[in-house]
Length: 112
Image (cartoon, rainbow, N blue to C red):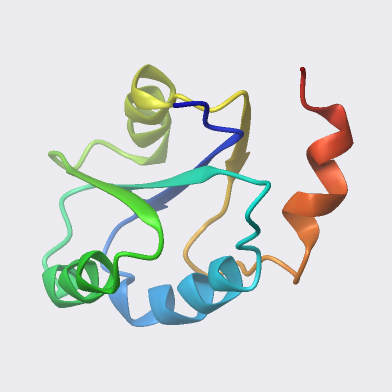
């Protein structure tokens, strides 16, 4: 299956910020656009598992959760680029949000 966008969110003890980002991703769901969301956890000790479980239970977003030892954001990005399947990549930190329709505006740049 083709994946248009791979969205990376590196996190370290930022679970409390992820619901806002998730809500913004929901505003970008479109039947003509596919995306995967990779959350790369850099050794968090907060309750990120509850958030991950909620998103997976919703089943709306293709979420891949990767937990790793604490080595810094740059190491999260290395993991992301090794795992990403999308034609385009986007890095959204936990305190970011995507405006409604943002992915649709970029789709003209996708290949055939």
